[in-house]
Length: 580
Ligand code: SAT
Ligand code: MN
Image (cartoon, rainbow, N blue to C red; front, side):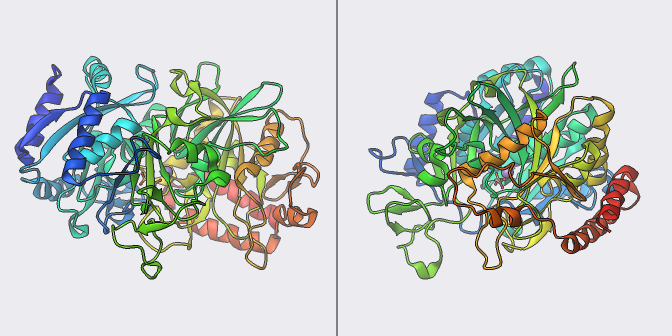
């Protein structure tokens, strides 16, 4: 196979000229192709077979121990003008970045196969779908892209019709952290990634395309590309509301996306549309509609068990690629808090010894098709997407942020999103557990200046009077002894229910300086071991702490200088005043 689209064949020829592969393989995206790649990788040791009786068609990949997470300090946005990348991104001049990458890529695929991976983000043929082609020398990337995107012949045909696509050039190189860069050229719709084979560094359809490049395109075209899960919450009356929720990496998006209602919630059902990324457009009636550009999940494994996420637990019992988990004597995959089995071999393939740390890497992942999820919504394939009732922001905060509160209006909601902060997790390399600002959970993913991004968000209320309501949640608040105050997981539905009731104007709320809070009786605690005092604490707003927080937010916003929208500054001033 090749292509009749000249810009594509020229680009592939150019990449081959630069990287000197032994072979070129155009991916068709068939199951046969997937299977034969798996066989090749089993033969080369890139994949290990797991217990096929317990875990049919499940495989383990061990990444290089130095290549286990996204590398934000090596990720660059290379716009012509440094200010367009903003203080939220690392920047390099495009010419300098290209020269650096050309040097790295020169001859790097000798003796390897160059795979051409045409892919579609979003339902094939949807007006909201976007297309890309990833060139890679990693068969692991190819099989992950097969599960994570609509990849192959169908995507190629659409690309040939359209004549445009995002270009992503990737090589694992030497997997040397000193020779590793993830470069984005938003103005040229181009990505270049070298030296990593892991997740968001290497599966270019995901964070690089569907967030960094897409956010840039979304701004010029009037839509939103966000780090949000999408769910449908169906009540016993059969009404379904769709929510899009933003949380930083490894803060429970996949768990919330696959939520199983608690015992006492008979007749309720949560449908999964997406677990990581939402593309949202205003339709002709001013309704915000969302699609999930992805077709699979690249989820955090540790902590996944029957109680925390039964849907994920079941989903990953077949047709799954595990990355960096441990294995048991039976050759089953194993991870911390799996709730069953004992590890004998750790994620690096060593005999398990607790002195070496956890058996599975804290950022170990599963890759699996979304269709395997028992709560998969068929509407994930609907070309027109789903109407969004509420947008929810959240972070991991041990204090300060209440369980849930609602923005007073759209502009206030944009301020709440811009103020998101969260404790860092193992999803990115660097220190874990320190609070950092992560506006809209997009800090690592916004492909342009956050100041312009907030202005773009703010522009929506002039375009529609039917925008979703905006909320903030915090599942991670702790008491003085360090214990979590809220049980989380399935019980989070109680909070979503309040959110939906607010959207439908079915319940009142207490107004506070930071937004609307549930009244004490409004969060249903039936069948739940949470005391009224704990709930009061969960919903409390400590004015002094909030003044400090808002001062911090003010300083943070000021660091964006002149580009910061006046309107956001004014929203911030309003909250400070209300707190005084
Ligand atoms: O490594 S990924 O970026 O794909 C996952 C994540 O950090 O959310
Ligand atoms: Mn993510």
